[in-house]
Length: 95
Length: 425
Image 1 (cartoon, rainbow over the protein chains, first blue to last red):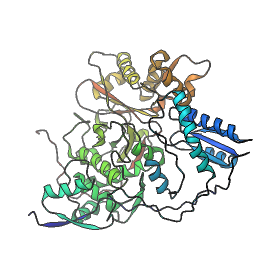
Image 2 (tube, rainbow over the protein chains, first blue to last red):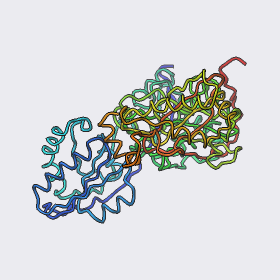
Image 3 (cartoon, chains in turn red, green):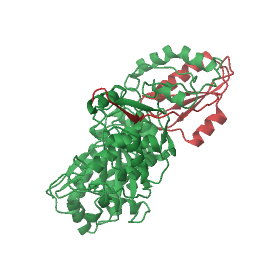
C-alpha cells in the first residue's frame, strides 16, 4: 500500500491577479506639499505620525499636514478627501 | 511581510513600505520620537523617489500555492497522505480525508452548482474561491455532501464586506469565525443545537466549521505565523459551528430577526473572540439573570480593543425565566446596554486614551465616567442554544466585524446516512 498512489485535487487555489498603477510620485522635494497622515487607530500610530509630521515641517518650508483616522478599512469619503486634499500620504499599517 | 503581501495582492507590489521594529504601540513617547527621527530619511526617500511602474502580476509565494489548479498523485496510505498534506501546510494539524475527484463530484452534485463557479477571492492572498476548491476543503474536513450548501453559505457570509475578512484573517487578535445555523436543515442534517452545542461530538457542527477553517487557510492563505498573525489564537479556530435551539426559543430566532422566513435555512457568521461562561444557577428572576449577564459582558471590556458587535447565547432555562418575566429580546438588549458599563477607574489610563479615540461617544463632556460594552443596544445579538442547565455564554465580536446572514442554497438530499448522533439513543 505504501507505494500506491491516489489522485486528489489540490485544496489551494490560484490567486486573483490584480494590477494597480501606483500614483505618480512626481515630487523631488516636499516643500509646500500637502501631506496626509493616515492613522490606523492602533496605539501610538497617531503620535508616531505626528512626530513624522513635525520633522517634515522642520525640514521643508510650507508643508501642510492633513491628519486623518481610520479603523480597519478606509471609508470611501475619507479616501476621497485624501485624494482631493493631499499631494502625498503616509499610511500607518498593521501592528 | 503581511504588508508586502497585501500590497502585492492588490497589484501594488512596488508600494514603498517602511518597516518599523515591533513593538510600536507599547513604547514610550521618547522612544517613539526617536523611532520617528530614525525613520524620517527613509520616509522622505519613499515619498520623493520615482515610482516603479509595475505591470507585473503579483508574485506571491508561500510554499503552498504551487500546482494549485492541478490534480496530484499522493500516497494512498492514509498516514502517508496525511503527512503529505501536513508537509504542505494544507491541514489544521488534524487528519484529513483525501479530496479525490470522485469525492468532490459527490460533494458538489446535490448543490446545483458548477465546480468552476466562483464566490469571490479570499484574503490575504486573494485565492479564488471556486466551488471546486471549496468542495476539496469540505471533503478534507469530513463533510457529508448534504452539508455542502451550508459550507458555501458560510463562505459567502465571510466574503461580505461587513464581515471584514481581511482583518479577521490577519489580526493579532484571537478571532475565529462563528457559524450559526437556522432553519429546518438543523433537524434534517442533525446539526446540534442542544446539549454541548459549543462542544465536540457532532459530525455536522464539527466538519462544517472545520471546512470553513480549511477554506480560509488553504484558499485564503491564512497560514499561522505567516499571514495569520494571531498572538494566541483559540481552539475555536479549528471549528466553531452551532445551530440555534429554535424549538426552545421563546422569541423569534436569529434568521427571522434578520428578515427571513422561519422555514428558510440560513447561515450567519460573526468574527468572535472566546466564549465567556455566564453561569447562573441561583437567580430565579429576570433581574438577577440580567445582572449576571451584564457582569460577564463587562469582563470582556478589558482593554482599548473593544467589540463592535457581541453575541449572547442564552440557554433555554434562562430564556424561559426571561420570557416568563415578559422580557423581549429588545428589552433584554436595552437593559444590558445600560447595565454593562465599566467605570473609567477600572480601565488603565493608556486604554482610556485609546478608547477616547475609538469610541468618542463615551467621552462627551456631559457623559458619565463609564464606557459601555457596546455602543448601541442592537449590537448585542441574542440567540438561544444549549441543553438543560443554567449556563449561558457571552462571546465578544471583533472590532469592525458585523454579523452576516446568508441563505442556504437548495439541497438535493444525497441519501447519505446523516444520523450521526454520538450519544446513545
